[in-house]
Amino acid sequence: MPVAVLTCSDHITVKLEGQHRLIIGVGQYGINEGSLTAEIALVIRDDYQNRGVGAELLSYMAYIARKQGLLGFTAEVLPERGLT
Image (cartoon, rainbow, N blue to C red; front, top):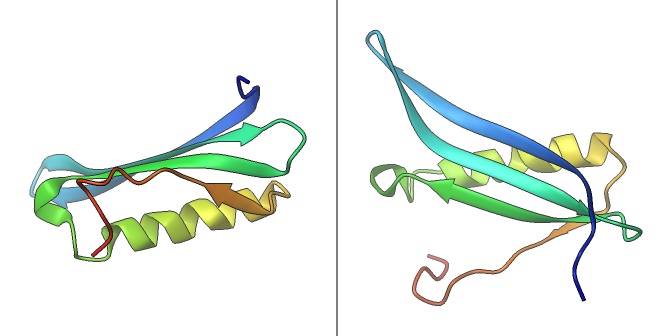
């Protein structure tokens, strides 16, 4: 059964290196119709993983979601990525 998406929220984490901007993480969620939850996806550059960037991005996305009245997130973690 397909999930109907009412709205999406996006956030990009950027690090300034001199005059250049480097995207180090991207987060997005789509709200599941009728459940007050959203499916979330986060992507962090390999060389910035295990530095807390993903945790900080998730925390900020949760803050935004709570302001929209959402109760929680769902997500799939690929087995080859795992959680460390």
